[in-house]
Amino acid sequence: MAQERPDIRDPIDLPIGMFDSGIGGLTVLHECLVAMPSEDFVYFGDTARFPYGPRSRAELELFADQIAGFLERTGVKLIVVACYSATAAALSHLQERLATPIVGVVMPGARAAVQTSRYRRIGVMATEATVASGSYVRAIHGLDAGADIYQQACPGLAEFIQEGDVGSREVADAVRSFVAPLRQKRPDVVIMGCTHYPLVAALLQRQLGRNVTLVNPAAEVAREVETVLERQGLARRDDREGDYRFYCTGDVEAFRAVGARFLQMPLDEVVGVSLDELAAASP
Ligand code: DGL
Image (cartoon, helix red, strand yellow):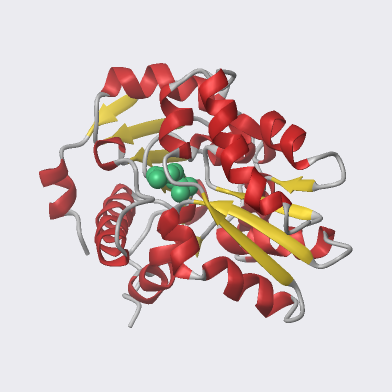
């Protein structure tokens, strides 16, 4: 049973909360900052426990509980699970437990892919956790039961992108090794189902070929958040420039340094949160 929503100030004035396994979700925040400039955002990056891709559903549910609980306590009007692995493993679990509206990143990309695909041959590139959950298969088949779906798990690719120069020969080789089997299935649309993959979109596009449409779900997620806020009467109407701030569980300076590459905007306030503090926030 979802909890009663706690007594809140004027919810319109509250920020939008967002979380990810680390810094990758900043590609989702980037789209939201562009689409909703007057809203405030609080972003939580669980950098101490990155990567989420190799983790079990039980672990990801626990982490999601802790972080969403932490965000609810700081006061947010909506939570975006800006991580594909966490959405795949824990979105329904969170929705059952929390009172705050929650948006995940799987369904918006699935919808865009189904709308875009002319031949109904949809590829999905994602982490092991996302592929194993079957979330994309359920989401796509819920919209088009006759679509063919080709999932490609890309173990290690997010870690690679996070660490390195996204234009290195090693990253290009890693991308090629994951694209090759997918390409043989001849998808006409491929979903970038991991927060890090838009950073290598050019490599993906080149190796998939120009006839394949790449879907970056982040822009669709921003649209979904806007629609939910609008329909629930929670969207800010004032002409202002909102602010955004960050929490992370790992090294604050590293978050700031690597984060700017993903956000493509300045990162000022970053506050460190210990895993003990986080565990205490579990609802
Ligand atoms: N945010 C994660 C995802 O989209 C990045 C990869 C990971 O943590 O393993 O799945």
